[in-house]
Image (cartoon, rainbow, N blue to C red):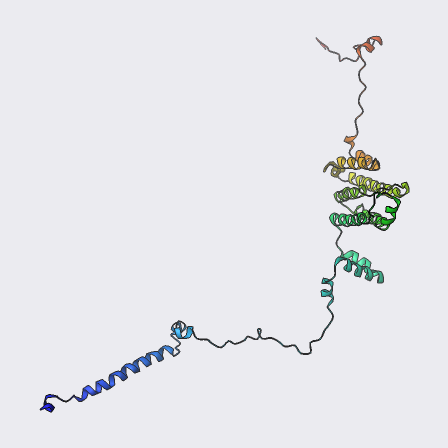
Length: 301
């Protein structure tokens, strides 16, 4: 009875029950396999795949990033270019001076290759000589004494020689532009003003000679400038006022230069004033009254 109440399960039910899980699992595996497999027409999907974005690929070193191991590394001297980079101004000047002394032909070549010194650089060098002179003074109550002069004598002579050597470079005919010559003389004259003076009159002759040389240099430049364009260069930048101030500060030692400038600028010379007319009393006494008055005519000519 019980066997008749429970009907048997049909065979096709067993097939569906067995095949359904395997079909779904195979489909899932197939879909996963397709997503992971490379495909030429689905590159965009591969790049956005989470499994590939978080994957760590082995890093390959480029040839440039690899360290080269030097074999037989040994010391060697610097090249001339690198060696010159390490030299300061004084050392470089010493090397050039030694080379020029050993080979006289290099002097002209160095002079041709070197740029022309500017006014600013030249005055800076002269100021450095002057500063070294001031720094050499001994501590004492009287910087004008013979003792002070003996202590600073080397620096004193170095400055005077520098003034003598640099000034002709800025004078005609070596310097063709009068404005450059005038600007240099204006600056170097201020340095001459600052030269120390001494209690011993014999030691002051050097400063007086410096004033005379500067005065002649001013006169030479002014005469040359007056030949160009009617001396128009001298009429601007207040050269008359500047040179007059230099002459006053030097105690009249630049009179030659100032007179040359006045001659070049003829309008500075005071014009001769006409003689004043005699007073009326003198005219009456001399019977010349009204003879110098203008004649006023009326009527017909």
